Structure formats: C-alpha cells, structure tokens
Length: 317
Ligand code: CP
Image 1 (tube, rainbow, N blue to C red):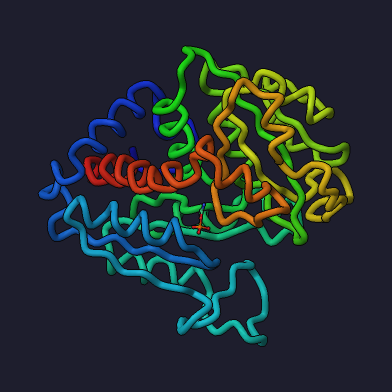
Image 2 (image 1 turned 90 degrees about the vertical axis):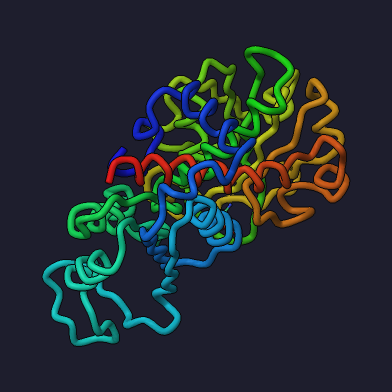
C-alpha cells in the first residue's frame, strides 16, 4: 500500500479486519518494522483522537513521530497555485511539502473541507499535493471528503459487536449548531457500501450526500422508519452538500436528536458516533451514557485502524 485515502486503498475488508484483530491482540508484535523510521503528522485542523491514536499506533510499531500543527508556530501555508503571495501566507505548499518529505519516511495529513468552494473541496487539493510532491507514502487523517481511519475503526467496531451476520446499520443525520464537513458521513457510507450489511441513511430533505458516496444505500427521510429494527445507529451531523446550499446549516431541529424513544424503535441497537459529540444536540445523555453506547471502544479502535494502515505503508517502503 503506497497511500491511504479511501476504502479501495485497503483492499479486501475481511482481510483488513482480520489483520486489525490480530494487531489488537498483540500490538507490539511488529516493533522492529518501524525502527529508525519517522512519521510526520501534519495538522491543518484540531484533533484529539486522531492525533493521539495515530501517534500511539506509530509508536507501537517502533517509529519516531513528529507532529506539526501548521496553524500554531509554522509559517502560514499558501495552498492555491498561481497566486501573488502578498498576504499573510509566507510559504507555499509546493516548497513546504518536499521539505517536510525530506525529514521523514511517511506523512499523515489532516486537512478539512473549507466548505466555501465545493469543487475545490471535492478535488482534495491539499492531500493530493502531498501525495504528488512529498515523495513519501501519505495517509489521510481526515481530508476534505473522507475520514478513512475513522471509517475503518467503525468497521472493526461493528465486526466486534455484531450478533448477526448481516446487521442493519443506520446512519442518521443529527442537529449541530455549526456547519460541519461531509467527510465522516461520506466515508462511513463508502465503507458500509463495501460490506454486505444492510445500510440505510436518514436525514432531513436538503442534506443529501454526494451520489458517489450514497452508492447503493437506502435513503429514508423518515428517521423513525429508518431506525426500525436497526442493529447499529451511527449518528453524525453534516452540512448541506447539494446545490447552492453547499456548506450551509439548513436545520438545527432537535426532533432529529437520537434519544431513548428513537433507540426503542431499533433491535436494541448499539449507538455509535465518531466523537467529539455535542450532548443533547446529536444524542441525549441517556443514550450516550447507556450500556448500548459503544463510542469509547469505537474511539479506542482508532489506534488499531491506524496501526494496520501505518504497518502496511511501512511494509511498502
Ligand atoms: N473522530 C475524530 O477524528 O476525532 P478528532 O477530531 O478528535 O481527531
């Protein structure tokens, strides 16, 4: 594996999950693989889970790790081509990327969608420039349109908790006061569509995701109907994708908040969320604090998904 930005990079999912569970049972079985190798983690945006889990995964593999927060202490980076750099951005990505590549063996990049220009976001301009110009294997730590390390951890978690061969997984939009990118729901949909699970997406009108991510998922606009018989409820907010509403908040309707009544419609479903989560907006305290909430094991599996990905990239060096 030379890069990891989407589900197709990881190959067959059954093999990837098996590898993940093997690594989980012996996290330090490959400490020689990363010896004298350096991972550079670059953050254009904030993080708790991705930062800690990815760093821990690399350390489990014996790697050295450097973390750069671009917006705290580094030169402000220009990402546009052909601009006159007379503003506050002192360095262009075109120089910064190969320089960063010269100090490390592998690069993880977090760069969210700006939510101003759909075409620019969906071109994945920033991470693609790292892939093109760094000369190093690159993996996504959440890019503009996908969050594959999260989706892989979600898949591992479902495989660990499922009690049916083909569970019903429902991804539901839930309210949030601020506009959030579509990366997590896009990516979750992409990964769920690559399984044989029954996969349903529910959201208010206007929150349709890009068709290439919706794929063969069943879209049900009635949240209660969608949740009937669910085995897993995956809650997430996202801003509008479609048309001129790109990046906008169209609704903060708390009738979409996941509460005990909604969970009562399911087949005693597990509750999932990638975190961070806004309590009593996305999900009630009662649901997230219940014994059916698996958000903590889900977050813990971020270390495992990252370790599989970094291990495979190390093996390709
Ligand atoms: N789920 C997730 O990516 O969390 P962070 O934004 O804290 O890294």
